[in-house]
Length: 457
Ligand SMILES: C=CC1=C(C)c2cc3[nH]c(cc4nc(cc5[nH]c(cc1n2)c(C)c5CCC(=O)O)C(CCC(=O)O)=C4C)c(C)c3C=C
Ligand SMILES: [Fe+2]
Image (cartoon, rainbow, N blue to C red; front, side):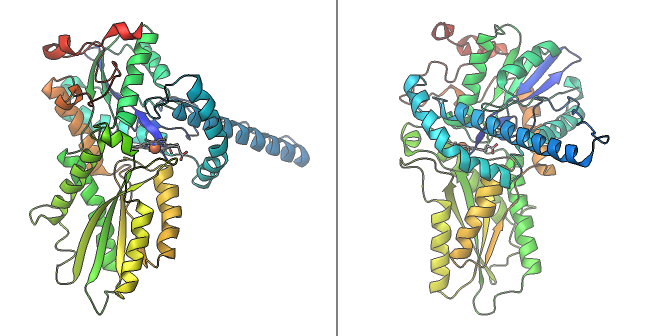
């Protein structure tokens, strides 16, 4: 269900040296931050103030309010429609060629899906991705200024693939701001061609369309699924939730207490996996690393003191959420596993506390606030799970902010344009734009990395 993050990009600016670092983050919305309610793409822009209306008589005020409400609703529906339309017409996400056929089919899909998605966003008060992306970017830059004064001041730009702030608008703003070095920092920790890949390819397309090939030097933070601080930030969220549970719940008398940690990742079509996309494997690697952190005696995030093995049995499982459409996607599904846990617990007359961890997203959005908090909670209750606990998203977690700034700092120190994995195209990929880079910043690999301009003409 989400996609806005398909295009998060943040950027760090080195104004002193007249260079800028930009990073695409999911925050910067990787996904399409579609449902965001903000109109202005830059967090630094002043918010517009609404008019007063104190002089009107009551009737007029009411009529005006109604009209305003209706206009606001219409505007929101329009925005959600634009979000879904851009998302479903992205051939790098839904590979139907991107032409007339995709447009015709997806028009129907969007029309049918819109009312439901609309209601979901209304229930959660709109997608908070943009808000969180900007908070994360802002805090990250503050930290970076202290960590890396030689490249300070740093500035972030959020950019999204399917909702404002759109990549093309952000690029124009960066140009106006005089940015020279931009770091495209995907806010999806794990690489997937449908998310980071689509967002970064879109970035290069827009750079070309706007004739900005020579405007910036680029480097990319394309994945960071095993970065120690990121792993620790996820472990810390789990440890806090479990500690709170243990401290506030009376222990089960008969057996030892079962604790199930469900790592709930956004699912992908099986076709993506068989194509050789590394997403599923990178997701699994993060889960293992987090579990190592939680089980190690030496880690400050060890669960052992909170859940001694004689009183608690801690299990973990990687599960997959947010399937769209009828084709086969990665399983087991989050909902299916909750139902199974409910059945097992009943059979053993046991109790199991279930902790659901959102971790391939870096902030709250429709999948956490609606799917996990409402839909799956209901599934869990129906399945008889007495304790269903949704672990908070990373949002403004201080360890996570440390992680973001450390990742950028290390990237700059390394002077490498990308990770080695970025070079490796999925077997069978025939998209020439994939794994390219425009105008790379660091010269040692630059020649080999230059984008094949021919296919863009
Ligand atoms: C249709 C195919 C989709 C794939 C493949 C997919 C992968 C994928 N998505 C995210 C993260 C997010 N997706 C979000 C919304 C969303 N995603 C899809 C479809 C696919 N996602 C849709 C249709 C939607 C819109 C909501 C809906 O109609 O259900 C969001 C939330 C955006 C927001 O609320 O602002 C996120 C985040 C990942 C990590 C991922 C995996 C590779
Ligand atoms: Fe999605």
